[in-house]
Image (tube, rainbow, N blue to C red; front, side, top):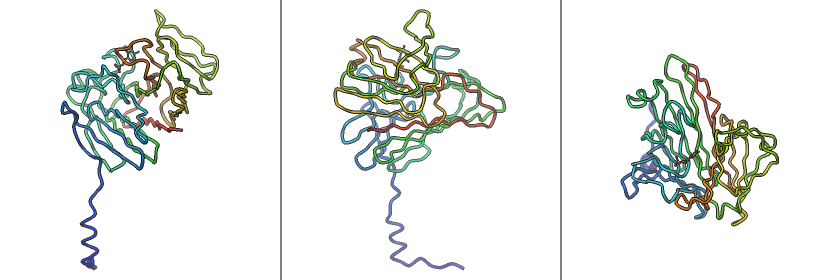
Length: 289
Ligand SMILES: O=P(O)(O)OC[C@H]1O[C@@H](O)[C@H](O)[C@@H](O)[C@@H]1O
Protein backbone atom coordinates (compact mmCIF):
# COMPACT_ATOMS: atom_id res chain seq x y z
CA UNK A 1 0.00 0.00 0.00
CA UNK A 2 1.03 3.59 -0.44
CA UNK A 3 2.31 5.68 2.48
CA UNK A 4 1.70 9.38 1.77
CA UNK A 5 4.77 11.58 2.09
CA UNK A 6 4.24 14.23 4.82
CA UNK A 7 3.62 17.66 3.33
CA UNK A 8 6.82 19.29 4.72
CA UNK A 9 8.97 16.38 3.53
CA UNK A 10 7.39 16.48 0.09
CA UNK A 11 8.07 20.20 -0.04
CA UNK A 12 11.73 19.65 0.90
CA UNK A 13 12.10 16.98 -1.76
CA UNK A 14 10.68 19.32 -4.39
CA UNK A 15 12.78 22.25 -3.32
CA UNK A 16 16.12 20.38 -3.53
CA UNK A 17 17.26 21.25 -7.05
CA UNK A 18 19.37 18.68 -8.92
CA UNK A 19 22.88 20.10 -8.90
CA UNK A 20 24.39 20.13 -12.33
CA UNK A 21 27.37 21.56 -14.17
CA UNK A 22 26.99 25.18 -15.19
CA UNK A 23 26.43 25.49 -18.93
CA UNK A 24 27.61 28.45 -20.92
CA UNK A 25 29.29 29.49 -24.14
CA UNK A 26 32.52 31.23 -25.00
CA UNK A 27 32.60 34.47 -27.00
CA UNK A 28 32.27 32.48 -30.26
CA UNK A 29 29.28 30.51 -29.05
CA UNK A 30 31.09 27.22 -28.33
CA UNK A 31 29.36 25.32 -25.56
CA UNK A 32 31.21 24.71 -22.31
CA UNK A 33 30.41 23.27 -18.92
CA UNK A 34 31.95 24.33 -15.63
CA UNK A 35 32.23 21.99 -12.68
CA UNK A 36 33.56 22.74 -9.22
CA UNK A 37 34.40 21.14 -5.91
CA UNK A 38 35.71 23.25 -3.02
CA UNK A 39 38.84 25.06 -4.20
CA UNK A 40 38.92 23.26 -7.58
CA UNK A 41 37.10 23.92 -10.82
CA UNK A 42 37.29 22.68 -14.38
CA UNK A 43 35.93 23.74 -17.74
CA UNK A 44 34.96 21.30 -20.48
CA UNK A 45 34.13 22.20 -24.09
CA UNK A 46 31.72 19.93 -25.93
CA UNK A 47 33.75 20.56 -29.13
CA UNK A 48 36.23 17.72 -29.01
CA UNK A 49 35.16 16.80 -25.44
CA UNK A 50 38.08 18.96 -24.38
CA UNK A 51 38.87 19.95 -20.79
CA UNK A 52 40.47 23.38 -21.20
CA UNK A 53 40.94 24.43 -17.59
CA UNK A 54 41.66 22.75 -14.27
CA UNK A 55 42.13 25.29 -11.52
CA UNK A 56 42.95 24.94 -7.88
CA UNK A 57 42.73 28.24 -6.00
CA UNK A 58 43.00 30.25 -9.23
CA UNK A 59 46.10 28.45 -10.56
CA UNK A 60 45.30 26.73 -13.84
CA UNK A 61 47.30 23.52 -14.31
CA UNK A 62 46.22 23.32 -17.95
CA UNK A 63 47.34 25.56 -20.79
CA UNK A 64 45.57 26.69 -23.93
CA UNK A 65 47.99 27.87 -26.61
CA UNK A 66 47.84 31.56 -27.53
CA UNK A 67 47.37 30.53 -31.18
CA UNK A 68 44.48 28.14 -30.35
CA UNK A 69 41.33 28.73 -32.39
CA UNK A 70 38.40 28.94 -30.00
CA UNK A 71 35.71 29.40 -32.65
CA UNK A 72 35.35 25.85 -33.93
CA UNK A 73 37.40 26.46 -37.09
CA UNK A 74 40.09 24.06 -35.76
CA UNK A 75 40.27 21.64 -32.85
CA UNK A 76 41.28 23.29 -29.58
CA UNK A 77 45.09 23.32 -29.16
CA UNK A 78 45.23 23.22 -25.41
CA UNK A 79 43.86 21.52 -22.32
CA UNK A 80 43.24 17.80 -22.73
CA UNK A 81 42.35 17.14 -26.38
CA UNK A 82 41.38 13.64 -27.50
CA UNK A 83 43.33 11.91 -30.23
CA UNK A 84 40.97 9.17 -31.45
CA UNK A 85 40.87 6.73 -33.23
CA UNK A 86 44.38 7.47 -34.46
CA UNK A 87 47.33 9.18 -32.79
CA UNK A 88 50.04 9.79 -35.33
CA UNK A 89 50.15 9.90 -39.07
CA UNK A 90 48.12 7.10 -40.61
CA UNK A 91 45.14 6.44 -42.85
CA UNK A 92 43.07 9.32 -41.49
CA UNK A 93 44.01 12.81 -40.39
CA UNK A 94 46.78 13.33 -37.80
CA UNK A 95 45.28 12.83 -34.28
CA UNK A 96 42.05 11.36 -35.69
CA UNK A 97 38.65 13.05 -35.52
CA UNK A 98 37.69 12.85 -31.82
CA UNK A 99 38.88 16.37 -31.13
CA UNK A 100 37.15 17.87 -34.18
CA UNK A 101 33.63 16.72 -33.39
CA UNK A 102 30.91 17.81 -31.03
CA UNK A 103 30.48 15.43 -28.04
CA UNK A 104 27.02 15.03 -26.53
CA UNK A 105 26.47 15.78 -22.84
CA UNK A 106 24.93 12.62 -21.36
CA UNK A 107 25.09 13.53 -17.69
CA UNK A 108 26.35 16.10 -15.24
CA UNK A 109 26.47 17.01 -11.59
CA UNK A 110 28.07 20.05 -10.01
CA UNK A 111 31.43 18.22 -9.95
CA UNK A 112 31.27 15.88 -12.95
CA UNK A 113 30.38 15.75 -16.62
CA UNK A 114 29.85 12.78 -18.94
CA UNK A 115 30.17 13.19 -22.67
CA UNK A 116 29.57 10.81 -25.54
CA UNK A 117 30.83 10.50 -29.10
CA UNK A 118 29.59 7.76 -31.37
CA UNK A 119 29.80 6.86 -35.02
CA UNK A 120 27.77 8.79 -37.55
CA UNK A 121 27.82 9.18 -41.32
CA UNK A 122 30.81 11.52 -41.14
CA UNK A 123 32.94 9.24 -38.94
CA UNK A 124 31.95 6.13 -40.94
CA UNK A 125 33.16 7.86 -44.12
CA UNK A 126 36.59 8.42 -42.47
CA UNK A 127 36.81 5.25 -40.39
CA UNK A 128 34.26 2.52 -41.14
CA UNK A 129 33.73 1.18 -37.61
CA UNK A 130 30.75 1.56 -35.26
CA UNK A 131 31.95 2.78 -31.86
CA UNK A 132 30.93 4.65 -28.76
CA UNK A 133 33.25 6.75 -26.58
CA UNK A 134 32.04 7.84 -23.17
CA UNK A 135 34.25 10.32 -21.35
CA UNK A 136 33.71 11.16 -17.71
CA UNK A 137 35.47 14.10 -16.10
CA UNK A 138 35.09 14.56 -12.35
CA UNK A 139 36.60 16.54 -9.52
CA UNK A 140 37.37 14.71 -6.31
CA UNK A 141 38.65 17.35 -3.92
CA UNK A 142 41.61 18.86 -5.77
CA UNK A 143 42.07 15.83 -8.06
CA UNK A 144 40.79 15.86 -11.63
CA UNK A 145 39.73 12.40 -12.75
CA UNK A 146 39.20 11.41 -16.36
CA UNK A 147 37.86 8.14 -17.69
CA UNK A 148 37.52 7.33 -21.38
CA UNK A 149 35.60 4.18 -22.29
CA UNK A 150 35.75 3.09 -25.93
CA UNK A 151 33.26 0.41 -26.96
CA UNK A 152 33.18 -1.51 -30.21
CA UNK A 153 29.45 -1.41 -30.99
CA UNK A 154 29.89 -3.20 -34.33
CA UNK A 155 30.12 -6.87 -35.21
CA UNK A 156 33.78 -6.96 -36.30
CA UNK A 157 37.04 -6.30 -34.44
CA UNK A 158 38.80 -3.00 -34.97
CA UNK A 159 42.19 -1.52 -34.09
CA UNK A 160 42.43 1.97 -32.68
CA UNK A 161 44.86 4.32 -30.99
CA UNK A 162 43.97 7.01 -28.47
CA UNK A 163 45.65 9.75 -26.48
CA UNK A 164 44.96 12.72 -24.30
CA UNK A 165 47.22 15.31 -25.94
CA UNK A 166 47.53 17.06 -22.56
CA UNK A 167 48.93 20.60 -22.37
CA UNK A 168 50.26 21.51 -18.91
CA UNK A 169 51.12 25.05 -17.86
CA UNK A 170 54.61 25.88 -16.63
CA UNK A 171 56.31 29.07 -15.50
CA UNK A 172 59.31 28.50 -17.80
CA UNK A 173 60.01 25.38 -19.85
CA UNK A 174 63.69 25.61 -18.84
CA UNK A 175 62.70 25.05 -15.21
CA UNK A 176 60.61 21.92 -15.78
CA UNK A 177 61.65 18.38 -14.88
CA UNK A 178 59.52 15.44 -15.97
CA UNK A 179 60.11 12.30 -13.99
CA UNK A 180 59.01 8.69 -13.86
CA UNK A 181 60.83 5.58 -12.65
CA UNK A 182 59.68 3.96 -15.92
CA UNK A 183 61.72 6.39 -18.04
CA UNK A 184 64.98 4.70 -17.14
CA UNK A 185 65.86 2.29 -19.94
CA UNK A 186 62.62 3.03 -21.82
CA UNK A 187 62.76 2.95 -25.57
CA UNK A 188 61.20 5.89 -27.36
CA UNK A 189 60.52 7.05 -30.86
CA UNK A 190 62.37 10.30 -31.42
CA UNK A 191 60.16 12.08 -33.94
CA UNK A 192 62.62 14.97 -34.24
CA UNK A 193 64.96 12.69 -36.17
CA UNK A 194 64.43 12.31 -39.90
CA UNK A 195 63.41 9.58 -40.31
CA UNK A 196 62.09 9.09 -36.74
CA UNK A 197 64.51 6.90 -34.77
CA UNK A 198 64.08 4.54 -31.83
CA UNK A 199 66.39 5.48 -28.94
CA UNK A 200 66.83 4.47 -25.31
CA UNK A 201 66.40 6.89 -22.42
CA UNK A 202 68.68 6.74 -19.44
CA UNK A 203 67.78 8.14 -16.03
CA UNK A 204 64.42 8.85 -14.47
CA UNK A 205 64.30 12.60 -15.13
CA UNK A 206 63.99 14.62 -18.28
CA UNK A 207 64.54 18.33 -18.87
CA UNK A 208 63.86 20.21 -22.08
CA UNK A 209 66.32 22.51 -23.87
CA UNK A 210 65.36 21.94 -27.51
CA UNK A 211 62.28 20.92 -29.47
CA UNK A 212 61.16 17.46 -28.34
CA UNK A 213 58.61 15.02 -29.73
CA UNK A 214 59.16 11.62 -28.15
CA UNK A 215 56.85 8.63 -27.87
CA UNK A 216 57.73 6.45 -24.88
CA UNK A 217 56.28 2.96 -25.20
CA UNK A 218 55.44 1.41 -21.83
CA UNK A 219 55.92 4.56 -19.75
CA UNK A 220 52.74 4.80 -17.69
CA UNK A 221 51.70 4.99 -14.04
CA UNK A 222 52.70 8.24 -12.32
CA UNK A 223 54.58 10.81 -14.37
CA UNK A 224 55.48 13.96 -12.40
CA UNK A 225 55.90 17.45 -13.76
CA UNK A 226 58.04 19.53 -11.43
CA UNK A 227 58.06 23.26 -12.12
CA UNK A 228 60.97 24.73 -10.16
CA UNK A 229 59.93 28.21 -11.32
CA UNK A 230 56.83 28.19 -9.14
CA UNK A 231 57.54 25.24 -6.81
CA UNK A 232 54.61 23.25 -8.14
CA UNK A 233 54.41 19.55 -8.85
CA UNK A 234 51.63 17.94 -10.83
CA UNK A 235 51.35 14.16 -11.00
CA UNK A 236 49.79 12.71 -14.13
CA UNK A 237 48.58 9.39 -12.81
CA UNK A 238 47.65 6.81 -15.44
CA UNK A 239 45.87 4.04 -13.59
CA UNK A 240 44.29 2.01 -16.38
CA UNK A 241 44.52 1.55 -20.14
CA UNK A 242 46.96 4.35 -20.99
CA UNK A 243 50.15 2.41 -21.68
CA UNK A 244 52.44 5.00 -23.24
CA UNK A 245 53.56 8.59 -22.70
CA UNK A 246 54.32 11.23 -25.32
CA UNK A 247 56.40 14.32 -24.51
CA UNK A 248 56.09 17.27 -26.87
CA UNK A 249 57.33 20.85 -26.70
CA UNK A 250 57.98 23.07 -29.74
CA UNK A 251 60.90 24.73 -27.90
CA UNK A 252 61.47 28.35 -28.93
CA UNK A 253 58.15 28.72 -30.77
CA UNK A 254 56.80 31.93 -29.25
CA UNK A 255 53.63 31.90 -31.35
CA UNK A 256 52.63 28.61 -29.77
CA UNK A 257 53.61 29.84 -26.28
CA UNK A 258 56.24 27.07 -26.02
CA UNK A 259 57.93 28.63 -22.97
CA UNK A 260 54.84 28.10 -20.87
CA UNK A 261 53.66 24.57 -21.51
CA UNK A 262 54.75 21.01 -21.85
CA UNK A 263 52.64 18.25 -23.37
CA UNK A 264 52.83 15.08 -21.29
CA UNK A 265 50.36 12.88 -23.11
CA UNK A 266 48.62 9.78 -21.81
CA UNK A 267 48.58 7.55 -24.83
CA UNK A 268 47.85 4.14 -26.21
CA UNK A 269 49.76 4.18 -29.46
CA UNK A 270 50.35 0.45 -29.84
CA UNK A 271 47.09 -0.09 -31.70
CA UNK A 272 44.63 -1.73 -29.34
CA UNK A 273 42.56 -4.51 -30.88
CA UNK A 274 38.97 -4.24 -29.68
CA UNK A 275 36.66 -7.19 -30.29
CA UNK A 276 32.99 -6.65 -31.12
CA UNK A 277 31.03 -5.68 -28.01
CA UNK A 278 34.17 -5.07 -25.92
CA UNK A 279 35.20 -1.91 -24.08
CA UNK A 280 38.66 -0.44 -23.50
CA UNK A 281 39.01 2.01 -20.62
CA UNK A 282 41.70 4.64 -20.06
CA UNK A 283 41.87 6.33 -16.66
CA UNK A 284 44.04 9.34 -15.93
CA UNK A 285 44.06 11.54 -12.84
CA UNK A 286 45.76 14.88 -12.27
CA UNK A 287 47.05 15.31 -8.74
CA UNK A 288 48.50 18.66 -7.74
CA UNK A 289 51.06 17.91 -5.06
O1 LIG B 1 47.21 19.53 -32.78
P1 LIG B 1 47.86 20.48 -31.86
O2 LIG B 1 47.26 20.53 -30.48
O3 LIG B 1 47.93 21.85 -32.48
O4 LIG B 1 49.33 19.98 -31.62
C1 LIG B 1 50.18 19.87 -32.69
C2 LIG B 1 51.43 19.09 -32.41
O5 LIG B 1 51.14 17.82 -31.87
C3 LIG B 1 52.25 16.97 -31.71
O6 LIG B 1 51.81 15.72 -31.22
C4 LIG B 1 52.91 16.77 -33.04
O7 LIG B 1 53.99 15.88 -32.95
C5 LIG B 1 53.37 18.09 -33.58
O8 LIG B 1 53.99 17.91 -34.83
C6 LIG B 1 52.18 19.01 -33.72
O9 LIG B 1 52.58 20.30 -34.12
